[in-house]
Image (cartoon, rainbow, N blue to C red; front, side):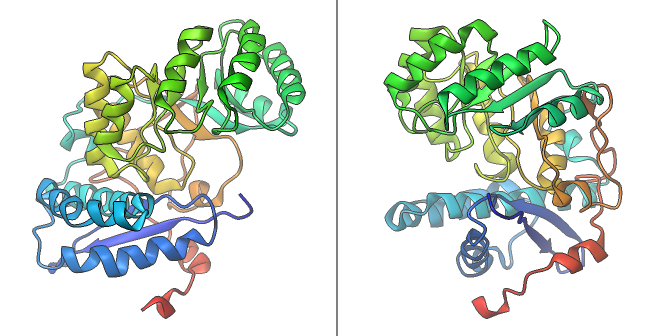
Length: 351
């Protein structure tokens, strides 16, 4: 990542009511144009005239019209990610219209604070990020690995030495290893009592994931790069995962991620939402986690990100290792209009 971007979606009705969603765009930074073009030319024409409160029917229409196109185009990612932003905005709109938080619309009534883990740590200097989050009460940390095996080992030694015995350590290889390297490294890393290894292999190597988890005994996590319910089912039927990680801004929004979590629960696999984006997806992830059964931890990027920290008029605050679920209608947060306007990118040239 060489820049921070976030793609916001506003869905507005003929009565002036609106909802806000977020489309994943961590990298590449120029991918913002791909998402906006897909949104404007592929999705928006399908939304005009639809009932915004009938989210299920809208999703069915979008996937029916665009899934095969995405397969032919080779662009399931931009399509699912763009639909994610629309779906998130529709849930926000519906909650505001009904005067209820999204978590309540999803069936959740006990909106307790959500335990988070600090991610995106390393592979460079790691001490400051760990210490700053320990001060917030965070007791679970995820280290980036896969660039340099010896550096990874040293970082794990350092991290384990900084943490309490019961604190959790996860590692994320971001698809960097082949099967041989994964097994060799994980056998060596087992001494650090890893809670999970995330994406040790290419995200579609389900047989390889099963081989890794069965060969090492270390739980395998993945999900951010599974596009929707169908891919999640394939991974689970192949016994590839111990933890599934739906991303509400990537996998099809709140609706499709709930379907992924439901499938995982039927397979007795918990979920831990992936999140590395802006404030809108974080708010949605908190509502989702608090309402959908089966969640264990919510990811929180440990690195500074103004689009997470300053996008809303009221910032998120980690207390005792947890984030509160917004209590207002919809997603329960309001954008800071001056901040949004300051960072707005002109995409009018895209038609």
